Image 1 (tube, rainbow, N blue to C red):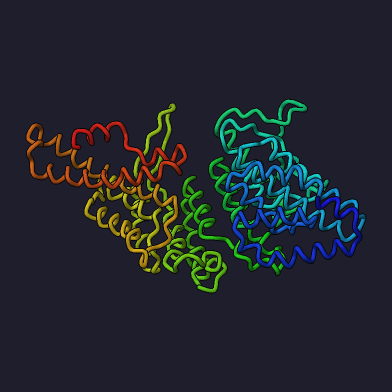
Image 2 (tube, helix red, strand yellow; image 1 turned 90 degrees about the vertical axis):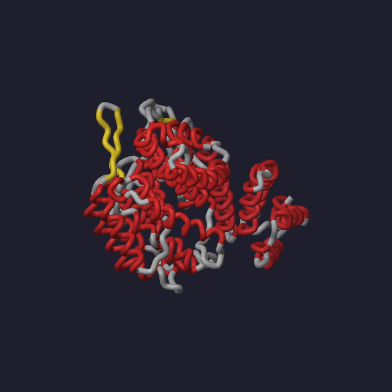
Length: 502
């Protein structure tokens, strides 16, 4: 084993092993999983030290392929022996190497156990990193937060590895982990969904402070996800502070050598989340202000071919990238408003917001950006559900133009798995629009509706869109959450009408 080799040899042999590993590493990114696995097995057989980069790649691929037994062997059997062997050399030059190995493998273990819903093991590795004097990176924090969003997962009290300092960092006051009400209990009693959402958001804020304190600079993806958590927990003030104070200050503190990385540039998705959150809580003036900032300052830079955003999405066509830039245009408004009285929730279309959305759609057209699915869906809601703007001809033209992007790749934007869910949602709205016409015709015509030419044509439309809706829904269901399933499902009333027609 590598450990015995290192302990029995001298520093020169260790240097040779490391040199061999680095030379091999040049080609590792091109290796398939079986090739990486063979590389590792051969390295162990030759008593050589696997490179960190290759080892992490191997572990990630083993997890993705469900090769749990091999993953467990590497992490729980081989890795401790490797560390023991390195430590036994007593060489000062190995101290940083050992630390890098531990951080990399433990980080990988957090994400792996979180994906398996093994909260205890994920927290255990999280604590190991904190106790070592550093802090897990953004990606591992997100993996843990995503796991804790799931109902029934026990909610742990985490150590955030804080120093005694309570100073403000990048405009952010110290944020602390929620604590258990029962002394000695490492788990918090979660009382409701909103309580869990609040706890997860508070944990996200505590992680943000610790990331900044340890100079583990949060990525844009972490910020975007944190904003989503704050929005769900209805923590609008905290969200506003993070987006407009902490994020700009942190960006100004990032070392120059990583500042230009696309991982740290505020993406259209994060802008969309922030703007949407303000419109969700009724702060429409602020949502408009942020949208104007995005359109005037951020969007022109992001659309440049030389931008970090373009480099990060270089595999997408230019049209695909432009479509991503258009998402904030549809997040500055909330066309459907909700109100709850005595436990009864009612919703209605806000006509002022509807008009504003139609205006923003025209602005997007002026800015020469393709319409994204979020825009298609909101417009379809208007054309199929708002009496003042009900127009199935416009709706049909809109959805047919959207559907064409799947059959004409040279004109299309990139098709992602979640697009099938949104496409099924579009088809559902088309079905419901024509069902509304059918229901009205049936009420107006009475018994005569069965032979009326207009009704016959409406039924043809309904059959056409049902035949589009059902296959798209079947493709989308395996990827849908509970709420995702609801938005691509017809109501019982609609199903009854469809059965009458089909």
